[in-house]
Picture 1 (spheres, rainbow, N blue to C red):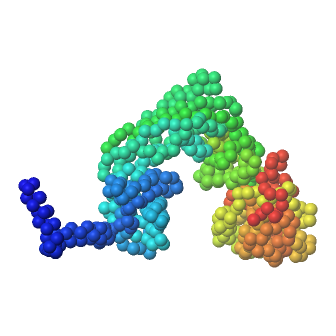
Picture 2 (cartoon, one colour; picture 1 turned 180 degrees about the horizontal axis):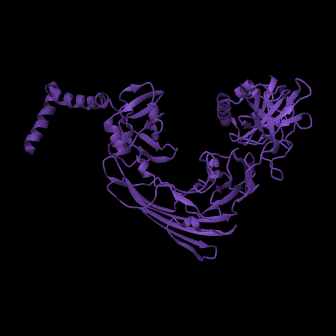
Length: 589
């Protein structure tokens, strides 16, 4: 065989010498032509048979970010290694699919991944939207939007890079009652992927240092999802054991102000067929105990038509005061139309105004509330206090026989007229601001006008039939016709109009649910939205519906209940307490 090969080359050289080498030209040309065309063939194949790629995967660098702009993965490959790179091949092969005008609105809440791809001298970035319960996924780049093929988004969701697309990959959150998040020190959390396999979550925020939280009087914590098992240990600054048990009774622990507590918690969620995630979390943190919030009420005995001032001091930053009326069986208590004193206030929600760690509110006792005990609770953070207030009967001050036309009087106190007032009260109640707009003392009309009757006085319409009704406010008589009427304190005009019982009237909101009503006006000189200073003219005295003279009817409402105007006229509310409003009427926005 060796001799044959030697003879072939000898003959070939001989032919060349005799200029007959063209006989072998095809043998040489074909391999050379193939060597030249193979790269071109491969390039054409790449273009026509890899149409689903957005980028040519040669010397590619890929960086994947989650929706919190945190790097999940980064990979750079060369031409010789590209076939072995899952991340680069996956992200550079996302099929653009159908082009859309925009990403659907309901996808905005889905996890968003940002992908940067460096290819040669070009850098391209695009956003992908994936869901762990996919029907369709999307991507956007260059101002265009596309669907992602099912094959590609399933490949991604089953990969090791898709953790942020699974809500189950985020373990339950431990929070203080004030809403602060406590980070775990150690975690082991497994979640189920789209293909049914479980994977350990790695994108969980943890902390190595000891966190410190301020709490009011007790340790109050809660998980966003209750654990199956939870073990809690609390020690003091000297290492002495204070509590050992579960989370349910942890809030019963109290400590003096300034105390430092060390808290260790281990919580676990068992693996079950009906769960898509399970694992355990371990916490270690400190609690600094603050003072309890202190509670107070201005009176323990009240009459119908009066109100109580509620004070809550030293509340935690961001905390809100909660008022709740305590329900009870009132079958043995005095009732009026089936309503007891307790039931009369259960629907009333005081409006608290907050300033410098304190909160104040007014609690009205509705007119007609029967005698009896009312009980309610004030809470802020972990602190609370229950109060008991006694309602006593209010004696009738005066009885006035009306001399005006019975027809006029009946029209003013008809069911139609009184229902009209109820509708007006309901319409203005949502317009009350929580902030106290009033400043200093309220003005009084008693120095300038003559009092005709007072809140709670009884009018007799027909002595023989004993028809009567109680006054809702104070009626003043003016010796000067069309005398100016000024606002009793700073406030915003929230209603102007006419009503059968009120005539022309204006309502001013002073904040904290408190409003003054100026009725029986001959003219109205303000508009809804106006902010009036104390004493600023809002209208002029008109004609009293119930008395013969010209005058003014003053009403005062608190949280939708009419109270005695004498309780605010000439008075400084929240006296000896931190004022909870701005310095002047310019503070009213």
